Amino acid sequence: MSTGSASSSGASSGARPSGSARMNIGQVLEQLRPDFPGVTIPKIRFLEDKGLIKPERTPAGYRKFSADDVTRLRYVLRMQRDHYLPLKVIGEHLDAIDRGLEPPPIEPVVPTVPTVALAADGMPSPESFRRRDDLRLSRKELLKVAEVSEELLEQLEQFGLLSPRPGTGHYDTDALVVARTARELADFGIEPRHLRAFKAAADREVGLVQQVVAPLERGRDAAASARAADAASEIAALSVRLHATLVKTGLSR
Image 1: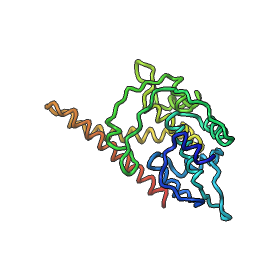
Image 2: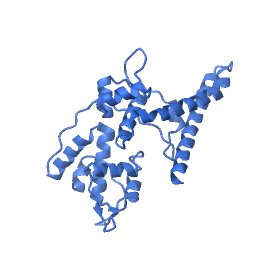
Image 3: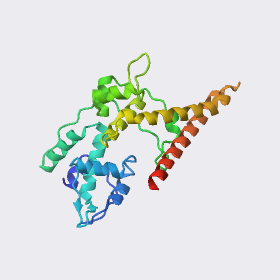
Image 4: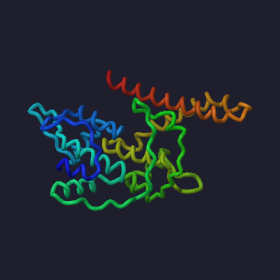
C-alpha cells in the first residue's frame, strides 16, 4: 500500500522518519496516539496478526515499521473509528488499494457516535462522566456498529453488563462502548462470564460514590444537585485512574 493511496483516503499526516528509516513499535505508537488516543501496542500486534500490516522483522525477531506501514495503520484505525467497518471489510479495502484499485464507497451506518472525553494521561476525564447524549441504537444497529454477534450480545445482557434503555428498547453510547470493548477482549479469549468481576467491582465503586455524594444531594439550595453531580463525576474519574494504576502496578511486579 503506497503512502499516496492512504493519504488520498484522508489519513492524518504526522511527523515521520524520512526515506527508508524504520521505526520500532513504540515509535509507531507515538505517531498514532495524537490522532488515535485509544491505540495500544497489543492493538497494533493484533492488527498484524490479522494480516492488515506486515512490518519487517530483524534477525532477532523485532518488528521494524516503515512510513507506509504507519499510513496503513492510520487507514485501518480511521475506518474503524469513523465508519465502524469490520476488519474483514477493511482488509478487502486494503487489498484493492494494494492492487491499484479504488476501495468501494463507504455507506453511512448510523450517526457519528460521541467520543469519550479523555484527560492528558489517557484516562476518562470527569467530563466523560458528566456527558449525556441522545444516541439511540436499535438492536440491529448495535450489532452492526459494535461488530458483535447476537450470541455475544445475549451473554453481555445475561451477565448484566449492558441493557437497553428502559421503556424504549434502544441502546445508548455506554452500551455501545461495553459491547465494543467486550468484543475486543474476546479476541484475547476473555469471555463475558469472565467480565462479571468487572461488573461487581464497578458496582462497589458506584456504591462508594453514592455514599460520598449523598449529603451533598440533601442540600436545600438550588445548586445542591449540580454540586453533587460534579462531585460524583470527579470521584468517578479518580476511581478509574486509581483502578487503572493499580492494575498497571500489579502487572509490572
